[in-house]
Image 1 (tube, one colour):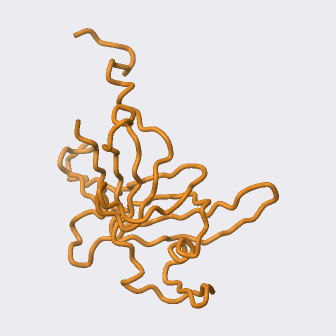
Image 2 (image 1 turned 90 degrees about the horizontal axis):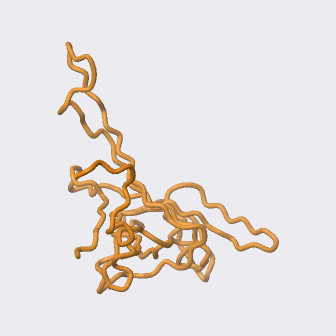
Image 3 (image 1 turned 90 degrees about the vertical axis):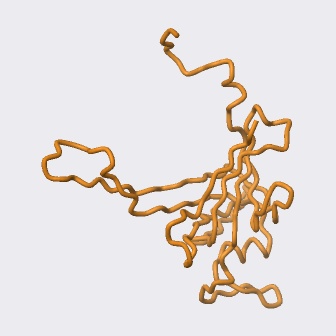
Length: 183
């Protein structure tokens, strides 16, 4: 095989992740996706930030294979939400509650965590099928400041940063997954 000077192949057009995707809370499966969060503007970003520590043994002149350790994993999904509902505001403000459609804050308890949040996207080769790519976060809360900006001749966009949390019963299993569609 000759060396090529680009990465394009005959399969490339069928392997491109397109569009903003859809966000679901309470995700279970494609057959039972949970609740659609709503319309977004500006896309969505799934991110897994893994801090990996390098162990430098005496005598090593640089990085040594096998001498790496995962120290921290933070998985997030950033959603730019334009569909504003009371339910979405309650999700955006972890620990909040509503009484007579008035939302107020409170402490966060275990019932405020969302079991699973999923970003469901389309890969071009599977666009005509029910086989999406699915990025899932587990034990999720929205972190970060809540900001609601109303501007003339524009739509309000609420930036939600969903953060996954390890289960208290399993501190080894990272709280995220990516389900790639099978051919």
